[in-house]
Image 1 (cartoon, helix red, strand yellow):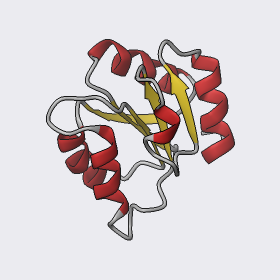
Image 2: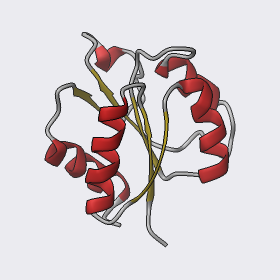
Image 3: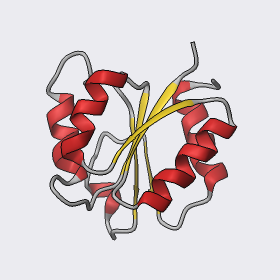
Image 4: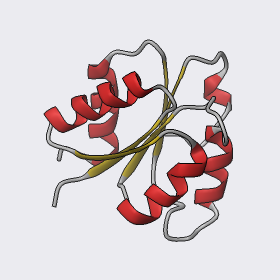
Length: 119
């Protein structure tokens, strides 16, 4: 079974780009445009890793992270923060990595492979 990555970002271009990078490299994907929608997608899709933007409408990334990590079945899902905000390394201290926008897709793939392995 292929490994699944959930992309959570309010910028449709970023979501489309990351989804295509992950799919082109053999991963399954799912996505959500904000933290509020992401909870439903998380429960339905059960990804092995989440890429998470911080600043989004309706519900910010850190709040979504707090909510999903309070549930036993999801608390160990690793998260990679991908954001254009300054100080992103402080927003979610347990993130496996923080990547600034604009980002190098090869760097993101390297982090994914180190975290959950190849697809």
